[in-house]
Picture 1 (cartoon, rainbow, N blue to C red):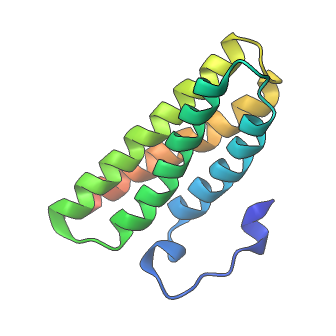
Picture 2: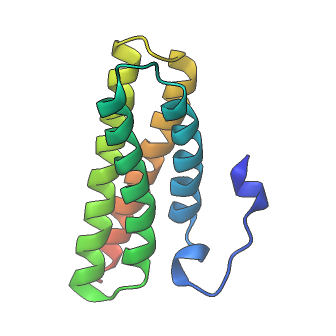
Length: 124
């Protein structure tokens, strides 16, 4: 588990559980992306971009304030949803074991819930 090896540093995002979940989803999702067969380069690229955008978006949002922070958390949530949809396509097309893919989708669902709450808290 990649979360076990992470030691928080000086940045705000490093202390967020949402960042740790995004980090785990990125790691596991990248493993799945690397294993996609030839001919699915577009799907592989889209999955990688969405996972990376969600991960980086959490970091960016955590280091912003006010409405800007809220908007960035919402964007990160949208990227997590896009990554989940790409993974759903992987399942539909039978390109990877459904059980492995669903674990990452579950992480992304957790991340989306966390980001929804963080966006709400950003206006308080």
